[in-house]
Length: 281
Image 1: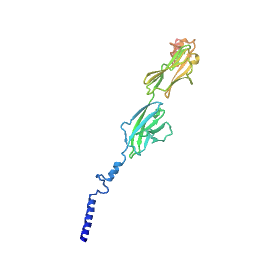
Image 2 (image 1 turned 45 degrees about the horizontal axis):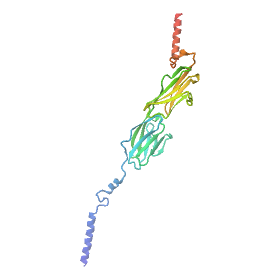
Image 3 (image 1 turned 135 degrees about the horizontal axis):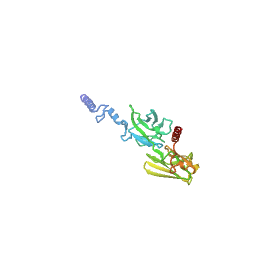
Image 4 (image 1 turned 120 degrees about the vertical axis):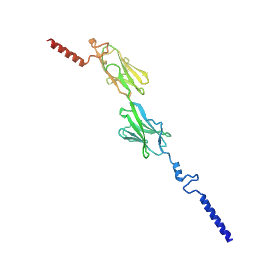
């Protein structure tokens, strides 16, 4: 009976040892993958810039610019926007670190895009901007902002000499525009040309990037003399000066709108005449 009991204990011990031999080590999972590897599998994948993130953005002078930065698997990392020309940190996540309130960053929920917004773009805003992710080492994507400045010109001479009673049409051409201006105002001196039925402003869209605003002034009087300015919204201005001449100076004009000889030309003619007179004496 004692021998049988000892044999049972021995068999029990052998079974325990066999079971331990068949059990994987504590640092190994049932599928043969180590626990350390299992932890790594559960870790968030590293951030990656989306391949369709643009490297160049073009925006018209005075409009709003949007510089997108698409990042996959951002996790708990921060997104920093930096202006390269002076290495100024503009934003960190949604926080702004520049006194210029035109700069903001925003991120829409459930998207991978962090966008830097520059409102009312100025020419000095053109340049490279860096979207940086706070990994170690840092990872960056650069976006170049191109500022497009449409040309604004008034057709013809900058000084017009016209006879009183004549009609003048001033044509202001806005060309090479990414978007048409919201409005085009005309000014006579400091006063906006509005509310007068005798002055007609006509706006024509010539093409996708070109507009023409025409100001027609009939029956000119001496009070119509002065500076006229074409002012498109958020763009450069263009000016012309109208000189209304009374009826006793018909010789000062050619076809009612040609410019008078310049002062330099008159001086040259006077000098030549004086030289001829001195030679004759």
